[in-house]
Length: 183
Image 1 (tube, rainbow, N blue to C red):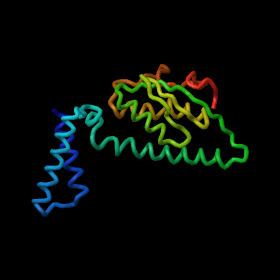
Image 2: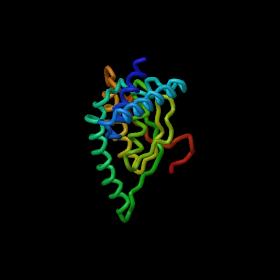
Image 3: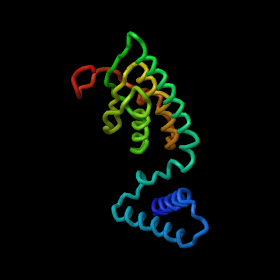
Image 4: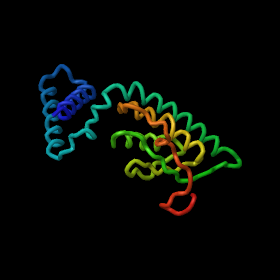
């Protein structure tokens, strides 16, 4: 029930923000009706749950705390990829690496996989159980970034009690058995 109420609140706030209609009561009523209709459809499809409405992450915390850091990392990775591409030698060390995750929920692992893909030079190929298969242009840099601060920040974002420093979050470089060869 708390997910339905939070989804309705998010839908109403989003409609009011995007429509800009605050003076015409008829339009506001139609907007509220459309929000309720969307909620009823989502409830009928049974997609209103902790993944569809991740209120456990908070409404503002991801945008104030994680998004600016991720934007900075994207810019830094863009510069690194540009250096690699513009270099006459092109020092590429492409490979597939398996990255064990330490996030406690599926939404945390999805956020990590999407953040890896948003960062230039890395692409999340597969998310399976608690492991992400990642293709990187430069395996050395990719392993350091993925196993380090990004995973810790997402773990903190989802409210992990403790962050395991025993190697669970570390990345393992090497060939993948999925394709049988380095790329």
